[in-house]
Amino acid sequence: MSERTAAGSAAIEGAVAQAGDNLAAGTGAGAGAGIDAGAAGGAGAGTMLQAVNLTRRFGGLAAVNRVSIDLHRGEVHAVIGTNGAGKSTLVNMLSGELPPSDGTIRLGAHDITGWSQPRRARAGIGRSYQRTNIFGELSVFENARLSAQAAHQRAWACWESARACTISGRSAAEAIAAAGLTDHAERVAGSLSHGGKRQLEIAMCLATRPQVLLLDEPLAGMGAEETERMLALLAELKRDHAILLIEHDMDAVFRIADRITVMVNGEVVATNVPAAIRTDPVVRTAYLGEDA
Picture 1 (spheres, one colour):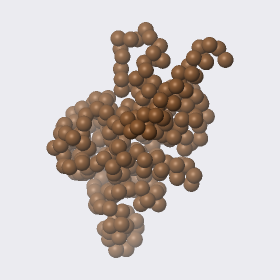
Picture 2 (picture 1 turned 180 degrees about the vertical axis):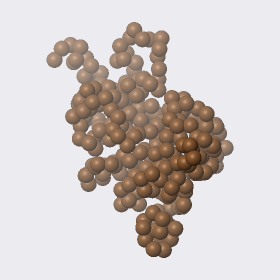
Picture 3 (picture 1 turned 90 degrees about the horizontal axis):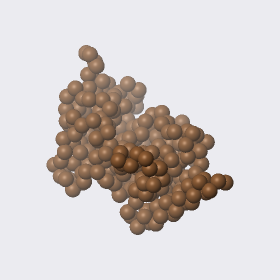
Picture 4 (picture 1 turned 90 degrees about the vertical axis):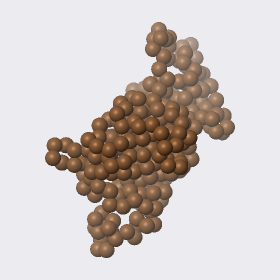
C-alpha cells in the first residue's frame, strides 16, 4: 500500500470512528440541518413539509390533481397507488425537479414552491430514486463525501484535495454509520449487494444533513433479509426526520408507516393510519380491488 493510500485509509477510519461517537451522542447526520422547519411554524405543529392542492398537468392530462399532504418529524408517511397513480410525479414536485402547475409547497414557514431542486436540497430536503444512483467505481465513503461536498461547497478552495475538508469527511462518515455501512466504508460501491447500494443511496442523502427524506421505492428488488435491514433503518431514521415513502410492498408499508395516503388516477382518495386504510371501503374498491 502506498503512503498516499495508507494516509487516505487512516483518514477514513478516523472519520468513521468519530462518526460513531457523534451518533451515540445524538449530534451526527441524523440531526439534520438547513431550515429549522420544526421550529419555524406556519404549517401546523410538528409539520416539516406541507403541500396544498398540488397539481401537475401535462397538456390536458392532470397527472397529479389537487393533492394535499403533510410530513411530520418522527413519522413515516407512505404514499401508495398503482402504476400511473401520480406518486413519482408528486415526489418530483416536492423535491423541486418538476414545477407544479398549481398549488403550494412549504418547508416550515417558508414557501418553497418556486425554489430550485439544489436550493431545496441545501435547505434540508433529500431524496432517493426508483433506480439506484451511485458512483459505482468510487468507494462507499467517497460517494457519501461527494454528497456532503455538494451541501458544504467550498468553491474558493478548488486547489485543495477533497480530503482537506474535514466537515465533508465527518458528514460522510456519520452518514455511512447511520446507514449501517461503516464496515464497508472503503469498499468499491459497485461491489455492494443490491440492498447495500440502496443503503448507500440513503447514506448519500444523509450526508447532506436533510430534515425531510423523500424515498421512492427503496425496497424495490430486495430479498427478505435486505428488506428487514431497510425497515430497521427507516425506523431508526424517522426519529430525526420526516419521511415520505413511495412503496409497492404492501406488507412492508403496513408495518413501517405511521400514516398512509392512497392515490388513484392522480388524486388522493384516503389518508389515515394503516389500520383505518386497511378497512376503508373506498380504498378496498379503488386500489386493493376488493368489494366494499
